[in-house]
Image (tube, rainbow, N blue to C red; front, side, top):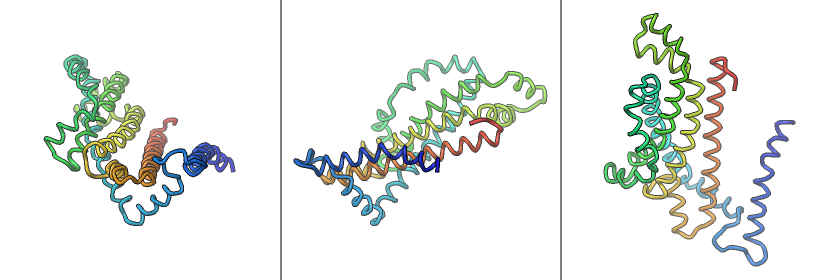
Length: 253
């Protein structure tokens, strides 16, 4: 009963907003011709499910975001560990990182188009660039906070550098890395949709553009709603994975 009440509280405000939008778009004087009633958006949503476009676009966006996140997170993790454990490497890489990190990921779209053309590789490259930096910064900070005595024990045991990283450093960083990963998941989805709106003729972002060019506000609203739902579900999965890892490691959520 308590869980049901929490869900009711969470859904109350969105329900009020939807009802207000329905009244605004259908009420006396119809406040805006550019907005569609949520009821029509729901019909457009079911149509997109029926003709398969919803699943096809969603699969492309999620696949691109996941692949870009995987590449960006792995590279950021590896370089972050190196910079976190080696003050000399951190000093050498400081200027390059601080110059490149503020570059907006969307500014990379023209270059990616020249190198990769339209399609999956271009989108993955931009997502990887966007997710690389938060993982790098947080992994570097986490590596710096690894207990020095753990590293001393690893040296005393004669562990190789690879074994020190895989058996000592990464397990000690796991809780903080999941914070970076959750941040990267959100960034990956946002950037993937943005790239599709701006340049890539695939995925959920492109579907919104097609709806806009077709002067179909109901379908646009349906896609916006679906992107929000997808983002919520992806974040929920990441949060549950973080909680599962914390329990396995004996940590507290």
